[in-house]
Length: 299
Image (cartoon, rainbow, N blue to C red; front, top):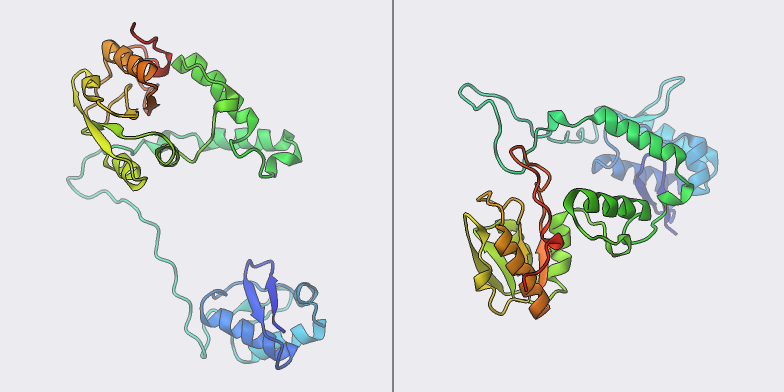
């Protein structure tokens, strides 16, 4: 019967032993080399380790390795692990992965990339991030590596609640915070369960509109001017999606009167406000604007 192995090279081998264990292992290794799962230069497990994983005699694994070495598919050197040959007569070398996308400066190109969503990554302190990560992991209990609470680590949710209260004026309960991979995932989850139609800024981010549309929600456009989104056209909306601190793409900040109007609408109708607070902390000409959630509704 077939045996499966997931070993130290992170490769899944399907060994069919119907014709014998050695023959089955040889065929499985040949197939893995031929289709590129075992790339040229990949180190194989020792015969002792592989025989223990498969439950085969060590001599069986040694004989299979020797056969593939004789065929030129594997190479073995004294004091070194057996590896897949760089080039073999029987199989072409695996195609190297394409190089990662890189940007090269060309004559006449702008000195600064001002496209949205592209921060200056050179300003990120990898050293500080690494030190913080090592400090936390060196003192963390083993259970932090388990799946844990689906809402996210309680320490992270508590830290976020404290920060949002201090920096953004948000009334946040750690028990009601859910950690997602980012705004796009959060919006997709909310669009699937919150009442529609969805009122969204026009113009606004096309990807966010597409996320809501994929959830099957009707969209009501909210015109944007120098004062931000206009709450006068909420109509029958059940949920409104706003970027009040820094409207995309206009850059407008939602006027205080309109902030109060949106919160009053939510209070009076039971509507839901989704606040995308991106760039809320980034103000270089004035004090950062607080989140709409902290604004009292107009009476």
